[in-house]
Image (tube, rainbow, N blue to C red; front, side, top):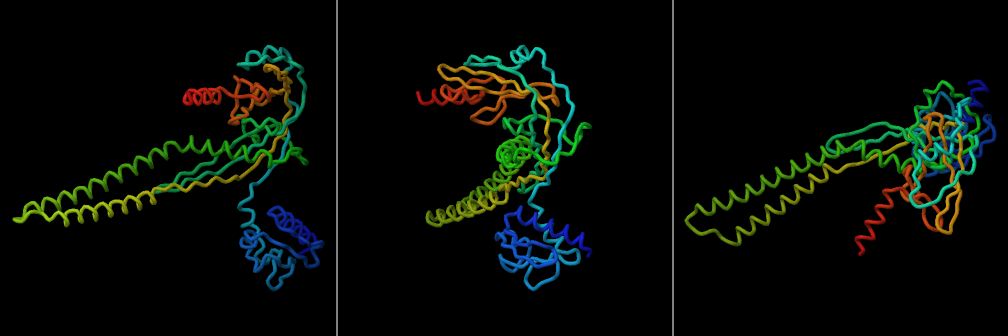
Length: 351
């Protein structure tokens, strides 16, 4: 193995282990180092202990970083839970700056506040497109892949075209925003998306469970009826105690079978980020002054040249996008119509 390859493997192993939470002390590839591994990383790497040596040459009980050993195998296991990340930028998009106030008026509805236009300015915003793999395992299996794109500044979901299909795309060496800031919101939106996408599968599982439960009820009730008929055919009257014992036995067996059925149809869900595409896009940011009673706050909406329209505001309650928004009294936070309706229904129930 050449010195250049050794240095590249040294850099790769150090970066990967630190990314997974390990503490690495390995200054140079030609000398052994030491690494302190989190428990789950130690298991994935096949390390004997949580503190082991790290070297390009094989060592007893340590991790070996070369192409002849098992480095590719255990590094692959560490990478399995880490999404691949690509950073890009889009250049030279046309930003329409004419009639901004009129376009704002046509696009947004302000339900309980006075909103004034302040200024429109050109800026750049990073969009995070998280691609997820989702799977539901039960008596049957359902899986799919889908993307969730967020404005990393506003946090609102945006229906962007596939960034990798844009001809204007260029590599971006130093993304400004932290990807971790958008991951919780993207995951929350992905969970909701999974429920919508898997609705037919869930309905099918519910129907099959209901069918099998009915079959069990019919079978055991038929057994009970048959046992009662046999006793009724005898010359002696049926023994009430034996009859009650039979009923209890049938009822217990039915409950046991139903519990087994519920366990068999239980759904195990898995949602895993696979790829993150970070795309810096030139946008038109429009600053607005929002007045609600005695409170005042500035909000910014974005005209996106990729979708050629304004992006919605992000509801402060549910995180969904809203073009018709009300605002809270003191903090002047945007609230979508669904959340307003939910609040009104809650007040009605209290009354």
